Image (tube, rainbow, N blue to C red; front, side, top):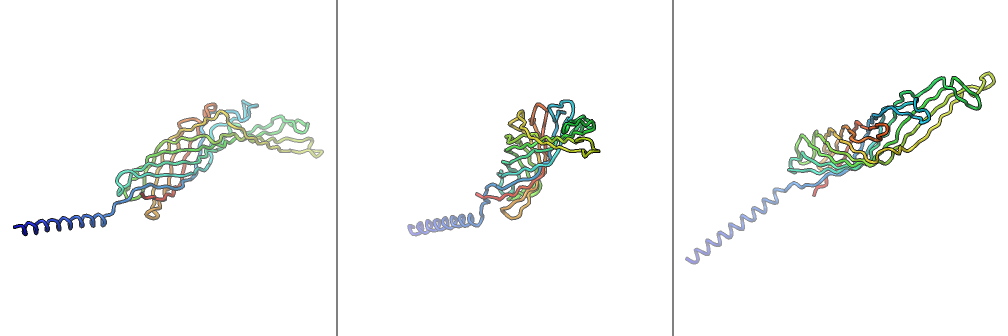
Length: 270
């Protein structure tokens, strides 16, 4: 009886050890998907649009040489981090953080940029048929932090396919300057005795002292993730930057942008 009991206990012990070994072996053969985050550079161009009230380019001539609105092309670029959320086998939800240099530099549109038949004195001679032309552009840049939610329509173990991305953007002003150009064309004297028309161009740059130090905006964009490998992801993007705050309240000046760019990120797996 005692020998039979020992045999039964020994059999149970052998079966338990075999089951544990199979469980450990199964764990090795079924690896878990590692989670992590993506990091890399991002950059592109802004198609900048200015919206403003009409205001004088020259303070000495408040009723003429007016500027209003405007447009231009400016660069942006920096670093990007992307944090996947949810099931690591079906990644669709992400938090994206960016720190970028964002230029919103552009040219203003002249409402009355030139004045003909303006009496001008040059070299002691008054010319009643002289001309004055003005132009104004702005050098405007920010250090921006973007925090956005991204949703991919196609699930996968790494970001893939089309998606949408939206979130707030907060910028700290790095520079805001008005760049003015004034060109005067006038006769230097009697053309019959060697006078003739001369042109003089003067440029100047002044700081916009009333520009806001903080810019708050909302960025919305369409994205498309392309896997170059298991670890490298390229993401072309196109979107719109909608300003909530003004650049300068004095001219009711806002700067928005339709933008396009490309992010190259490496999947750092934990």
